[in-house]
Amino acid sequence: MLHLSFIIPAYNEAARLGASLAKAREYFALANYDVEILVVNDGSKDATSEIVRTWEHQWSAVRLVEQPQNAGKGAAVRRGMLEARGEFCIFSDADFSTPVQETARLLEQLRTSADVCIGSRGIDTSLVKKHQPKYREMLGKAVNMVVQSFFIAGITDTQCGFKGFRREAAQAIFSRAQLNGWMFDLEALYIASKLGFRIVEIPVEWFNDERTTVSFWHSFQIVREFLAIKRLHKHL
Image (cartoon, rainbow, N blue to C red; front, top):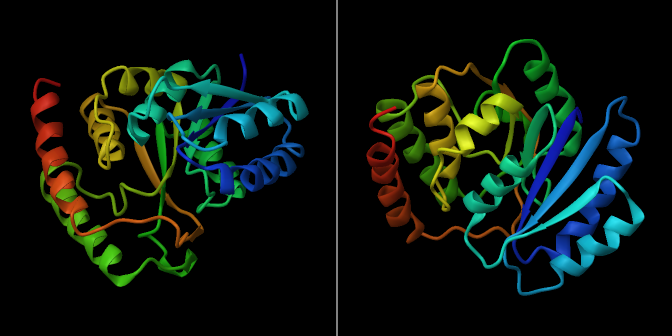
């Protein structure tokens, strides 16, 4: 079986994706295991697909997965996880806010003890090399207060876009997941906890990308998705 599936959800990522794939190729060239890079194009309107197709010819590990239309990051990650062929499955933001080198630390946990291993900006804040704007950090803290009280106690950061799963956990979790929006990460972790999978959180290096935008109005969507998670998975 293929060892690692590395999944990158991408929506209008033509400006950033080439550099990220170059970093991935440089890193995985030194790995002693097989890897596939699944780029899930979530209905992009720019040249994202063309860039990935070019990379498919340059690097046999790359595979383009096309969504028929833009459905959201949650839908793209879910598609990648369910199509992945690896024994372990990791997804990463396309901008590599968490450097690809942190893959080794997630894999170490997944190989030895964890069913799910998540990168965290909350355990060791010294590893946050470039911070988000204050309003985003405040929103993140508010989200975590709700998470701790009503969903999963003991996890400091459910929203960092760098998470890994053993294959059996990925299949069980993402075959049940339904959210496409901001809280898809929390939904996946909530399902994992309900199914009894062991979740390990580790500190990772992280750099904020200023091109990533979150507005005050997203807080209303977050509240709706909090309620949806409870409703959709109340029988787990």
